[in-house]
Length: 205
Length: 205
Image (cartoon, rainbow over all chains, first blue to last red; front, side, top):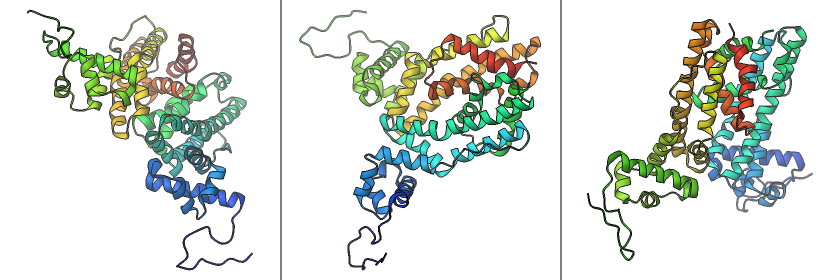
């Protein structure tokens, strides 16, 4: 494959070697996140994203018919993954680790962008982004909590009925509540405090 | 005080007898809530509110310099009050009662309007309305929970450290979380479930 740089006088356009599939998509999603952090939802345009990814508008629209589709995917893809349940030998230590990962996701670039975007966008787009929070952050975290707690039940550390009903909602509920209402950024010691004051009494067999 | 109705041919204007102070303010705030429910934040205008309260624009602007000021006050004034802690003899029953009141506030006309308005308005106004949620709903509810739990500690039903730290945040956190994430409207049996699955183990001495 030969590649040649366009001359300075040529007008800007797609670079000469074609990126394909996942590589191009990755570039477009990264450009979308970059635009979000510089000009926000309102300033972001499909043209601007295409330019940032050094590709043409058509390549963007072909995969993402609308601004919401693009930004929702970019945020979802950008969030840290939350899928390996830690095993540090005790439910208290494991919960602490999962909470720290959830906090890190909420405070990541995409995590913060996700919350700003919710304020800037219209009601329809907001539903899409709420879904990203639920599917990209809350559900994966809750699954990790479930695994950790199930291990605790198996060890006899945790009462069996902790796995049913609403008990597992308490952790994400607390993390979202104090983030929203007190503006908490959940430093490690605050996470430890929540686990000791709330989760341990709640789960104790 | 004489009052005379304007004739059909006269142009609409303030009615002939002057309402003063609190009565006029009440009429204006009610008109604002009415406008919110019919045309929403975007459709609401100071002129429209004045007309709905059958007064002049000046009477509105004199007291509320901006649309946010007016709507924030209307919502705050419209929310059900949450200030008498029930005493039904046991912490479980008392918590149930306070949660039902908090649910009723969230699902009241103003409670629902408050959440819609947050989606429709710009970032600055959103801060004002977030403050109404905190000061008009969350803080008063949390105070009621505190009173109820303190009584439980005095009776020996509840462990003393339940009054410190984050434990009291769990109830409003759960109510807001499931409202937002599962769209729950907290029917009575769901409230009872939360109290039995979450609050009782958490508070038990």
